[in-house]
Length: 352
Image (tube, rainbow, N blue to C red; front, side):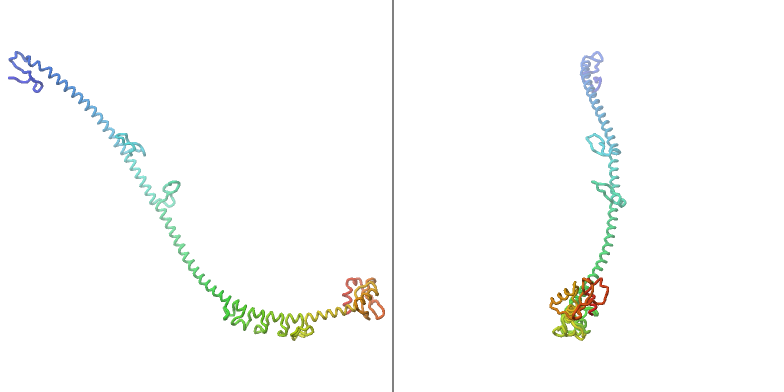
């Protein structure tokens, strides 16, 4: 019976009793092949074992990095920290960072929604930003102000309308007071035009400015006349016009005619009378002279005659002298200290 010494390990070596021993020639010759094959397999197994060990180490490192990444992705506190360089995941942030970021954004959103009035939420570009609540309250205030202003405007509009109505009425009244000639504007009050040129109720009662200026007959019911009549009327005004009193009475303004029914004369009449009296007095009083002959010569030289009763003031002896018809005599002694300057007044007093 032939059986393999190691089944499946090699062939050609048998345990054959007839070979004369346990391992015959045939059996010994297969050992070298068996050893070589087993050595090669062992080397391959070693290589595979080393590869498996390296792979296991790499897998362990990868697993460790994955654990670190997972931890960093969960809890890193760095706001902008790189979690890991594994698989080039630079610039990645943790769940905690994003949670904090979301919390910040939620708080910012909350502040933008309801932060207290006039409290800035944040400053962007130098400009304070405020919440919706702030702007809502501001808008409410503006609306209230606008409502108040609208109410005020409505009130003012009503007042303006009333003023406009009043102004319209005043304009009508002003127009009437300026131009109305068909009656009084208000009770007893007439327009400027009516007073100027005449109008119903004015002409027959008080007279217009035109009538008071030039009308030749009585202007009003009281019998008063116009300025023209009082200035130049001849006979219309019983009291006399200015022209009558200046020149004389009657229709021709005669100097020696009395004025109206007054029995008096004009200024011209009295001026002429005064001139006549002055001339008559000048013929009687010669003025101041140094001597009788000087006084007499001056008087006759003016075309006058020397008559009894004539007077002159002797400036040499300071006496007043009168002519008797043949000689000059002194008047009774008086204080003559002022005769040089008052002689004419004294002579006038004596003459009159």
